[in-house]
Amino acid sequence: MPRTPFGTDTLPPPLLTSDPGSFAEDTFRNRLPAFLDELCRLNPFPPEIRAALMSLKREITHGLPVRRLAEMTPDRAAWDEVWSRFIGRNWFQLHWYPAEAYFYRRVLEATRYFQPGPWQGRDPFAPYKEQELGPRSQSWASFERALGRLPTEHLPRLNELLLLDLWGNRADLSIKEVAESAHAGLADETNERLLIDHRPQVLERFTRNHRVRRVDFILDNAGLELLFDLALADHLLTIWHLERIVFHLKPQPFFVSDAMPQDVMQALEAMMNRPRLAPLASRLMNAISHDRLQLVTHPFWVSAYSFAYMPDDLRRQLAEADLVLLKGDANYRRLLDDRRWPPTDSLEERTRYFPAPFVTLRTAKAEVIVDLTEERVAELDAKDPRWRINGQYGLIRFCAGARG
Image 1 (spheres, rainbow, N blue to C red):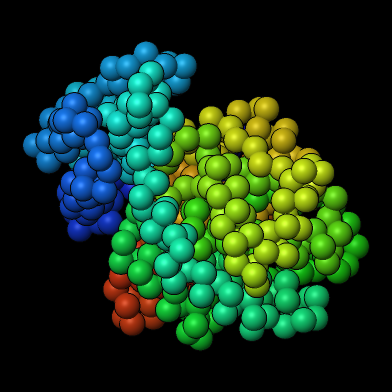
Image 2 (image 1 turned 180 degrees about the vertical axis):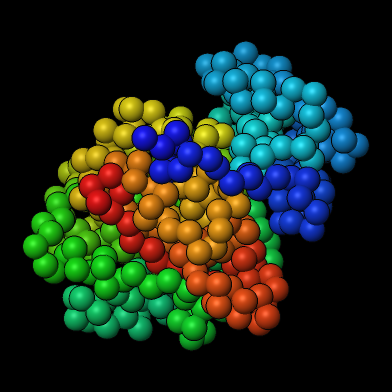
């Protein structure tokens, strides 16, 4: 029996925040300190919250030891377990994904998200989300234009919606240069940047002997990407007559733009104010009221752990799905434990632990990637040295999971 849940006896090294020239290093050396400055500019925080955020910034930029959470909250024990692996280390000596997850939990501590007072329960990342779906945002025009170009036939429409839902993942508000390219990418011919295209395998599950009754979405970003998630869900419910769709959402702010239940409801309410989108929003609100579209959360989605270590209750929930749509780069990284697997390795082989068949829709914003030939990697390296991290290349990869 393999000694790891990934079907191997040993694991490749993790992506580290200390890897010279890596996106992980750049994230902590440049992106996150700048983000903390911007967070203070965009929110009317009182002096004590600003001071706490600047203290976190100094902890990162001055190479100080990673501090333990100070506040007493129900999740304290879980984060103490994570922090125990950081003892004596600074932010540039950590496994990348757990470090990012812990950083965003520290931001919530600094902004007093869980503490009684005027900032309790207030999303510190709301200004970013409001820019993405505010009345003047170009997201609405991009979305309406994309829907207007869809074919009317059922199967081609589903095929195109999957592609739009993939490229909508470029609208990641935690990576500004990637988010700014999202709207243009929807209008471009981007199929040449689609590294893996398993849409035929996905469509086959709807057209052959696979009776699809339930599809679960493990969502990523609010904003434009969420609009395409909603459009795809509406298509599956109204045209393919699914019994149920489950949206798995974050229970608290995470990674700046990650979607929570309130983000879904706010997006639907905004759609209701746009004549071309109101019918879509009305159908989805009706589906929510009749329990055909469920909005659920789980603490695991905002944890520091990869999917191989998901708790049993969540594993049982996902096992009830006929197909899971797994959105975004962070979720792809969590499938592979954020490690340096050889690019020629197989996602199918490494994810036999996953409790249901799934398709991952991911635009690449981190160095981890598999299922490519050595020749393809060499070609991409020569053409675009930043192809692994710039959000311009995507994949739609189907895997059978534990049912394979």
